[in-house]
Image 1 (cartoon, rainbow, N blue to C red):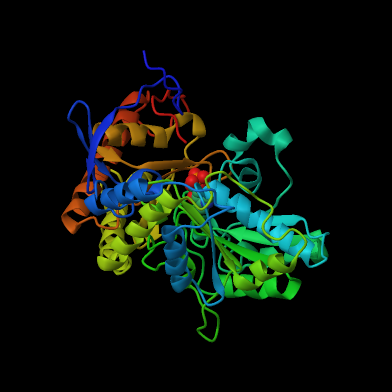
Image 2: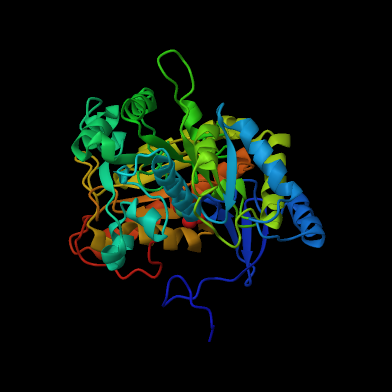
Length: 469
Ligand code: PLP
């Protein structure tokens, strides 16, 4: 019997004993292609020796000091490297461990900035649905994930929600969710003098399955935020550090004059550390930090034991250098194009096409959304646990994918995220797509065989062995 309190109870996960490149190996010798880099984390692949060396070197130099009292070379160098990548003026980096913590810090910074400026009524945060920003209580408050929120609802704070741009399910290009106008409506409803910040994933993570907003969307968001003095937080925890083929996903967007969209705060995590050591970052405009420096608290009123962690920063710095030396951001764009076109072929595949409603994404971030009816985009009833069966079957077939549910209407909706290491080779993409094609076909076949009349979409519940996250 294991003494581990697993995240999912009732199942004992395979024990991974080795990982190399895009592959994981369990204790029984089974190989898995890591098609989602875990939770969209493993940006440079597994088992990269130079990262292990950098971690070992830092551990034997100085692993940890209190981030309030001291700084260290890797923390300084990582901040310099990120400031050089970020849009002009966004050049102050605050380091934490997880994406949720970076989001907590970002929203707290937004609030404290307004307080320091003598604008204490600005308390309202606006976020989007579907959307996800983490599982600590403030980050969860800003996340539209009913299954994560339900139990803790009495502890969550009110965050206003607007509809996220979700082209596959939008009413059309004029839909206020698609144009960004929904934000202005929400700000006016809350009273502009009460609104502190708007937080959004620049390109959809698993919540809207890699949905890419229209080209003008963020110019409109920036314009609205500027008009009403609202801070724009770009949550790039999942999309940042090259995943979409640009270092920041927001770089895919510009204003009418072709100028970049500059957010006030950027959060990073996942791909920043590549999974080698927990490290997230909040990048803030210098002007915000200067306001805090002049304020009454002398800094951000937010402390964590492991902020500005030397060893984790050394690991992330080594990952960043690896990404630069191997030009992985360019690679994510180029080889990502191959990934996207290969996945799109699933829509025409005879054995699986019936349930593949949409295939979308950009760079090395992609999603396949499953539907019960392609013509109406009707999702499977949640009780069918369609995506759970895809994930379980894919794992049997040696493929790791990331599931998401509920995006269609809050409850129903099944999709898988495909986000392999940026280093994946074209032949490995062929292997990934082939395994996915086989998996979908097998689940569809099993579904058809299990229904009385041989038709799909039975409403009979299915007991999944791999509960969805
Ligand atoms: N923000 C986004 C966009 C995410 O996708 C996630 C995690 O999936 C988070 C924040 C939270 O990050 P973490 O799970 O590291 O706390």
